[in-house]
Image (cartoon, rainbow, N blue to C red; front, top):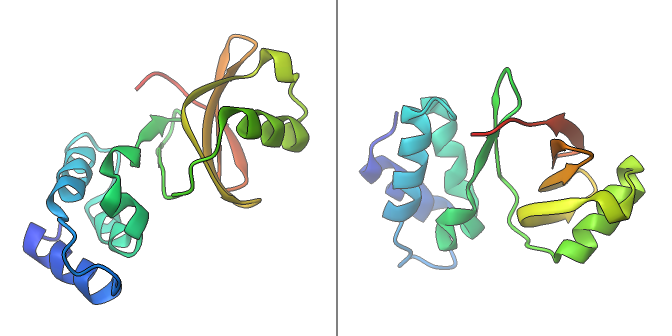
Length: 136
């Protein structure tokens, strides 16, 4: 895995707008995910390009879909009401039964990260795919 210094250097080379960002909170979150086997060491560096997660490292969350961990890489927060509408339009769930869990993120029709409960099951809509997820 890259060191904290290497991660910081990569961030500074890619995120030109704000050279004073403190990357250590994000690096700590990502390092913990590697320890918990939610991310591979090689995936850590990919987060150096996402300026949203540098400003809000708590938005980098992961859910287990059984065979793998799914980690947020989407940065635009949307309201629960909009998330519910998007879910129901895309997947046909009954709106009154959809309960949004956590903060929903939606950047485009093929780039989202929305966890929700419906009919006693927990789902995650991530990057155009729907997954059943389990307690982390």
